[in-house]
Image (cartoon, rainbow, N blue to C red; front, top):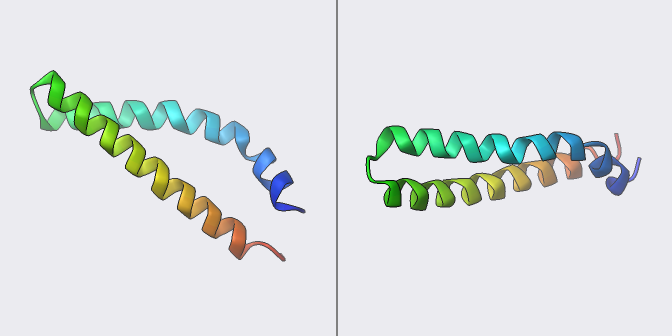
Length: 68
């Protein structure tokens, strides 16, 4: 199976992960801070950091399973 087909079969999971990650980052930062400006700022930073980490992990797993 090629990488493009492998990625295409996982698109549905990614579509659900992005809003879920946005909600998790908002709730997590809302429990830590009280000012709305800081909550939004930290949530955006947490969201993009998490997206980058998840993308790196998905790429690593795709590369490790290349010839399986």
